Length: 188
Image (tube, rainbow, N blue to C red):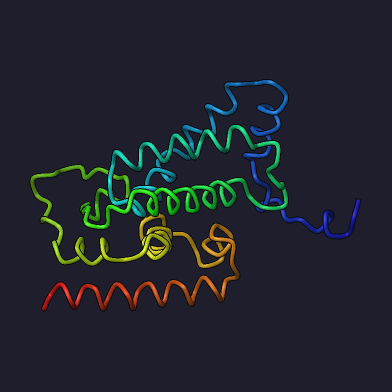
């Protein structure tokens, strides 16, 4: 046993690894367990980038199909969720580039994948926010989705987007600035 492996803290253990091992040894139900566990978060990422429920649903199916086919390649040095979110971000951005429907708009509460408990008392989303989001590049929408809607840390965002924590911080800052400029333009 290496010194690094001996120093691993128990709270860092990824319980998804056990489920993955079951799947890789022929337990098809194990993948269904991963699918159910992560569907909402993957859908929220896809919808935050694509700004369309139907496109997001299609992307989620493609994402989980890719994960299913390539799960043997998963490098167990990172958390499964980090790898999955990276696949989700990359696939969603690819889909957004293909589709090029930048004018599609979705309310912020819908982009999170969460339904409100009482729709009648909710104030309508500011249309300028929707317009500003629609003007952003897919990568900006992805990082804003990961930070604000999925509430990932900068470290988790960096791992999900394949960059360092400092790069994630810089990208988030720049995405916020582009959003602010687009919002101010929509307000003018």
